Image 1 (spheres, rainbow, N blue to C red):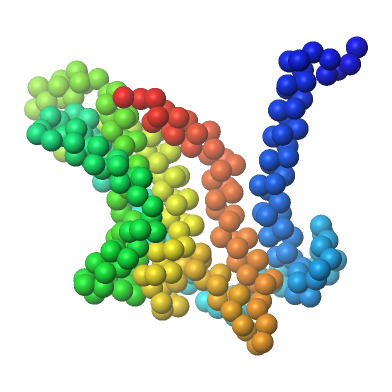
Image 2 (image 1 turned 120 degrees about the vertical axis):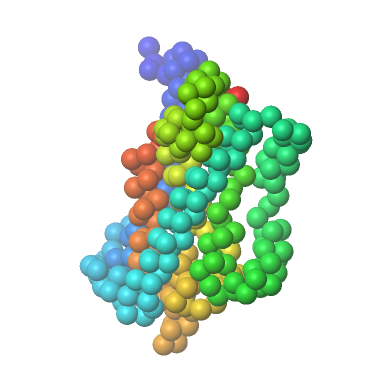
Amino acid sequence: MSVFGSPVRRSAALSVVMTAVVAIVFFFPIYFMLVSAFKSEPEIISQTFSFLPLDFQGLGQFQRAAEIAPLGTYLFNSSLVAAINVGVTLLFSALAGYGFAKFTFPGRTALFLFVISTMMIPTQILVVPLFVEIKLLGWVNSYQGLIVPGMMNAFGVFMMRQYVYDIPDEIIEAARADGAGEIRIFFFIVLPLLTPALASLAIIIFIWSWGNFLWPLVAVTREELAVLATGITSYTQPYQRQPMWGAAMAVATIATLPLLVLFVFFQRYLVKGLTAAAVKG
């Protein structure tokens, strides 16, 4: 009897094949980037593609990338922006989620619906008004203009609200009866219970902030404030009459590694946080 004789087995085999095809399609650009980071420039632009470097460059492209542009500055700026955005977004989202879930005030539902409705607005639409705003504040070409617009996230508010909503009211009421203030309740009772959700949200915000390209491209033009996502363009501009594609691939590899590490080691928490937020509340 054929291994794929039954409809169930045929369906399972087809599912495996389709999953493998999709995985290959999505993984190939990453593989191309990694391999190209170790190829020579002529080999990269050659019309004949090779799956392995024929002229292995070692760390030559990475060294060249550090020589052409301030790679260390790009790394520092990306790390700084991502760290501040993650920390502040977690705090603000948890505070807002706690307020929406455990406090009753006029217009609470309407305000919450307004907050989550902003998730439907494409980011590109907000770029111009945000730029005008930071220009009026004098924040163009500054860390403030680069960081502050990313300090609040509607999805984070929604996610925290869903988690806080499931915290029993009896725990909070007991703390109030013992004389604990709202700030103490939030930091010593609510936040510890939100640790899994905060970890998931931290990963999401880090991925978004680390890979954000459009806003840093608009908000800053000075090279000393550029992040990795925009700094890669320094290598694709004409440099000594030819773009340095090998160096660009090396920098892209460096920029991708933290995201790959997060996904490989923390994907369980990421998926759990996203799915739990969708069904809670």
